[in-house]
Structure formats: structure tokens, C-alpha cells
Image 1 (cartoon, rainbow, N blue to C red):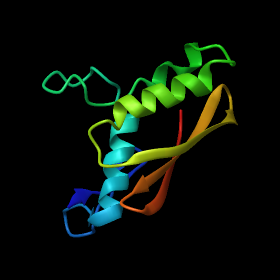
Image 2 (image 1 turned 90 degrees about the horizontal axis):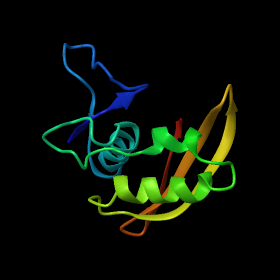
Image 3 (image 1 turned 60 degrees about the vertical axis):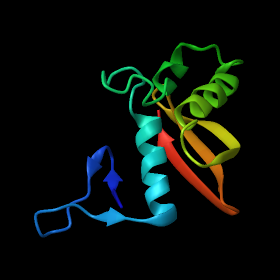
Image 4 (image 1 turned 135 degrees about the vertical axis):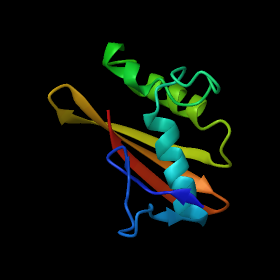
Length: 114
């Protein structure tokens, strides 16, 4: 079971612990963690995380391609296939990234702001 995240923080369960989830929900929590963590910032696991924070440095023409590459790197150890990925402006130089996944025949998606 994975702890549930919301806006980068664990969701409290009201009893001094955190909300936990299993199955596809747990997978989505791991995916979200891997996509939001900065790759190389956790010394014991340097391959953990993504380079999505670098997207703003990419030219507009190459951002989608870079997003695919960074997302694939981050999720390489998960048992999912990326079926699609979209980027859309979120204002103030930010972008919304939606990743569509296939997990054992189930379609899932996760959206985050970069």
C-alpha cells in the first residue's frame, strides 16, 4: 500500500497517520511521485524521479518530445505503458502535463502542473 499524495504532501487520515491506497490507485501515487521528484536529487537512488522540471528550458517545438523522453525515463521501472501524453499552457510560464497509461489492460491517467 502506498501513501496518498496531494500537492506534494501526504494526505492525513485524521488519526495521526496518512491515507493509504492499493492497486491502480497505488500505482498512480507511485507514478505521480516519480514524475514530480527531481531526478538525481535522492543520493541513494539517483535514477529516481524525472527531468520534467527542465521542460521550460526546451524550445516550444521540442517540449512535447522532451516530455515523452523524461516521462519514459521516470516510469521505466513501473509496470505501465505510456499510451499518450499531452502538454497544455497553465499560465505564468507553467504547463499542465497529462500522462495516459495502460496498466494491465486498464486505462489510467495522471495530470500535474510543471
